[in-house]
Length: 202
Image (cartoon, rainbow, N blue to C red; front, side):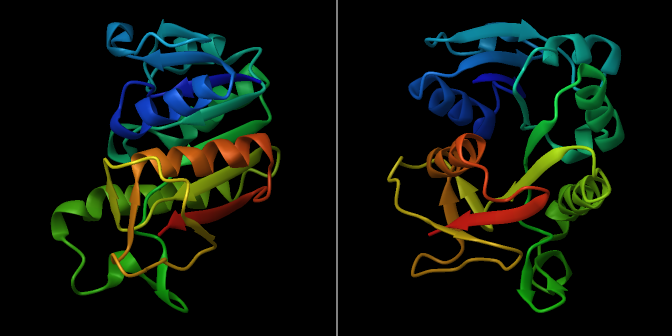
């Protein structure tokens, strides 16, 4: 597939880029500083700003799918969704956050007393992004929320997929960037969560 990846040099984005390259996809890897993008087979670095729709949309044109891996507090969901629409791309996968996942029916992680205040702005912005996507009926979108701990680790290929509920296992609620990337690219190749949020964890 031809994939446009926004935020290709970030912690999650760089692992997604590696996974896409490993599986033979052609990737336009977009970052503000393309020199930070790893030199990998099938990867074409491109300078782009997630907050500049006029310059971003042309970079997305011709892609079979767009993946965005950007901080929610540093981006505008309407601008990003608009750029995908303007480029004429129907499939849009978003690296989500854990804050909007439920710890009990109707109770979000972000609303729990132990949720750190420092993470609330990003978590709330992620929840707002998800709400915008749920109104985008013209796009085949998916929003993949990681577990509560989203950290560097190993590519184990051993993880679970869930829906709106926070996953927890013997290690707590956790997923590595590497295994998250597998789950996201799996969804890209074989869509199972069209117009839905889902989650991945151990």
